Image (cartoon, rainbow, N blue to C red; front, side, top):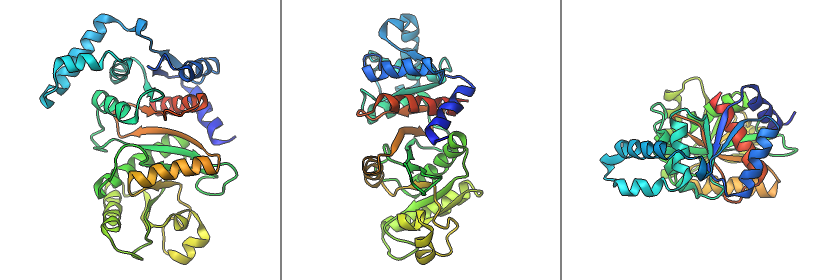
Length: 309
């Protein structure tokens, strides 16, 4: 059974309810039908006629109280809640649904802001970031062609501490959703001191901090991507690596590298890219690319459901 089939099967074991607030998007509507028909998740397709006016007003007041210290105006909050996205996020925060999936007709910044503001950031992780589950056909790399790429959507230029937090959060997702042992490579243009720069210094800092945060993790860096995923190259460039060229989680030094890499792999190798999956929140939420397919929506919902189990 391939990774996507396993994800959908796992989601079916303990049905969770996923809210989809983009009710006017035809891809989302079709995905909701498939999710229900195949018994992958329960779905709340949140159209405006399903919004309770009293509940909406309560959410507006609650959101305002949560964020008024940041000088947000009540009228501004009312404007935010004219869109179903914030209502859906507040429902998720209160446990009325189990997870949130949106982004087909919202930008990543809009989806990320709504998720962070309403769901809150996990105090252990301290930051929100994102990842993709990449499923590359006929590939020996990672976990039989399955890898996690992070961060590909939220933090433009993460510092060492943020890279460590991204690593820990991605490892937790790997265990929960894919049931694999995380093997994390902190990527660079340099392998273990072959070059020196501010970038390599922050990756070296990230390695030390990740080990402090989660001593049990198999994490190593800084390293070039071929040394991270190809055992033969690892033996030449970095023979002492804990990973031995078998990394299944790739942590990119910045958003340029992560975003370009996932899209390049997706297009050139016809890989499935499930995500962006938002990491580090108190409740599970997944972003969607605005170029997503119906299948992308289904798979993101399935992953979100597993994370809620």
